[in-house]
Length: 96
Image (cartoon, rainbow, N blue to C red; front, side, top):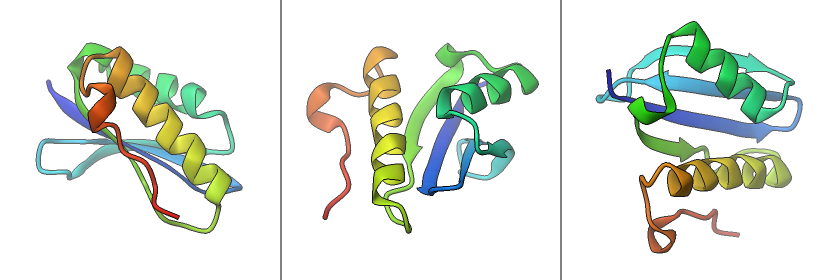
């Protein structure tokens, strides 16, 4: 199963990682104050998804916490690059 991932760290007290289908409908999510990678690991295990099953990884680019957004974007960009989903020139950054 090919899936997409949305990393939302725009709230400084809570993080949410959602597993999406190809039409961006939510299949499931993990939420909490934990580290982004801990939530990602829990989500992938819960829904039996491998990193290699991910087709697209995005981060929420707006919200109340600028530092939180940068954390989510950094995680998404690192995963996109390491998994070979996007080359460096195609990585996304928030506009401030």
